[in-house]
Image (cartoon, rainbow, N blue to C red; front, side):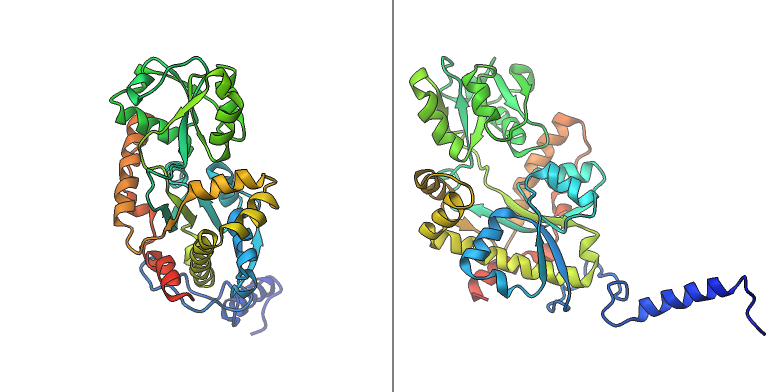
Length: 348
């Protein structure tokens, strides 16, 4: 029986869809990778990842690894949780580099993500990411002295979570201080301290050194908070891991990321010159300070302690924000747990 003119377009569309689904190598041809299925070890030709991890880009270039990646890579100049989550939602990013907070808030806002790599600092209390900056004329020598102080606070970011952890450690609550919401980007916190807009603010990186150097004569100081603040993660959308090709590529990227992290520690002079000075425009002295501050990386093959610490901050944030508690283990894709450590051990 001849096909009616009405049915011809429908039949054509069906045949086209079938040909795409059966086409070898087509992204739509592969069945979705189950969350408990082993990670594919081979990356299909033509696979591409969009990665927001600016410092690792430079580390891969300097270490000579960039040209050896078994997939195509597009770099996105994105960092921090809010930018990364926005790019995930726009389907404009596959991998993001963040601290411990973004995965929590992403989940609370309906964005399903998984952590696929975790890095910490050996001797983290000797190499803190942040110190508490104290405004000129303000006396804070211990955490107990925070009572009654105005503290810079950035909800949804690592600095904001650190403030809540510090208050808990000091036996204080938000009612015992005044939290002043400010973005933690750039020089906002050091300038807020110097202008006495706030009394206390967590400041990190080169701002620790610069703040005291610039305003120390006026009485500016810093104190260490005595808590771990060293998590560094790679995370992705859960949906991305359902693509077997991208899952394999992400596995390969995690291995390269781990090797690059180790290379940075073992080649400080090349890193200081190539990243801090050439890429970031800092002085060699600032770069040396940051390299020493970072210390030696710790990329564990067992994430159980990391998950337990993550659960502690989830519980603090849930209580303070009114969001539902989450199970920290659900934020991690444990299939990736040994990838980084094995890459460093095997050197491959």
